Image 1 (cartoon, helix red, strand yellow):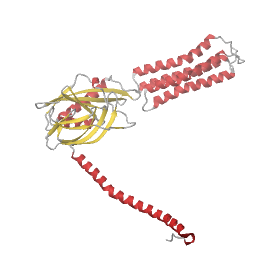
Image 2: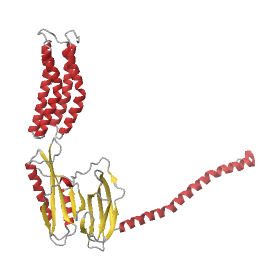
Image 3: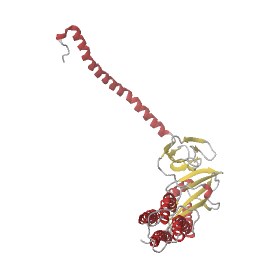
Image 4: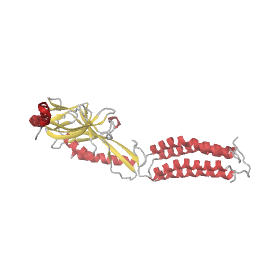
Length: 141
Length: 266
């Protein structure tokens, strides 16, 4: 797989997950399960949470100009994809439960995001950094 | 039963005789202890019966005392019945004037319940709230602080045939199933209710109301004036309670409090 395509795939995973999360929060507000200030707080919270991995991905895309023919390191790519999926599923799963449960609390969701995601974000950041700094033969600078 | 062996001489016979007597002695001891048990038991029974009888003759019978909260100060849920045959009505400190016979169930923070013949009158009886039962795992009643209530209140008057306290207890028991706290301060008696859910016009919003009733301890004339203040809070299905009310919720709460005021006056 071309390196640029691999970069786009990783970016898409994070962007799609973030968009689904924001849609779920908007849906909760639309069905009057939360107040407008809860909507604002949750949107800001999710943007803050995603700013770290998205920052790594975007800086990886624009910071290091790859040649069009450069191939992605296969092992690093699949590790990055797997960890990105797990990390996003941790947030997305809990937010889905929050949205479709009859009774939940914004405070409980925020506590979960802070605790679980905060503790696991280093995995994603490490995997992404490794992927974006590894060359085709698997060598890191 | 033969216990004597002729083969082993007289000493042997004597020894074996002693061995055979031991089980008999033991049996006799068991019979004696059992008999003593029967002899001793009746006085114990008589004693407890006498204690029960003396308890039933007391004017106040504390049924249950539960400690339901410890912070910021202890809160007890008390349930008792009382009867003062020589009185027409009595005054219970922190509760108000009530009939001379009845039963009550409410929340209070006092360590004892004092019964007087009238407000500021002769002390009739003191019931100490000793050895309260603490319910493990039970949540504390949802009761607001007095400071959360606004200064503004609805005013009502009671000119009914009975005592206002008893009417208030009947209304509070009907609308606030989790109970109410009673106390007195500044020559007034207060009844501070727990939160109760208000019938809502908006399905997505939940509204809870608590009321603070007050009446003067001494009232010389009829009708008896009283006040009703209320505090309310609302939440949506996925949020915590908040004290700031939306306009529909405020209207729901006010309608509910008007209903209570109306019930108190009739």
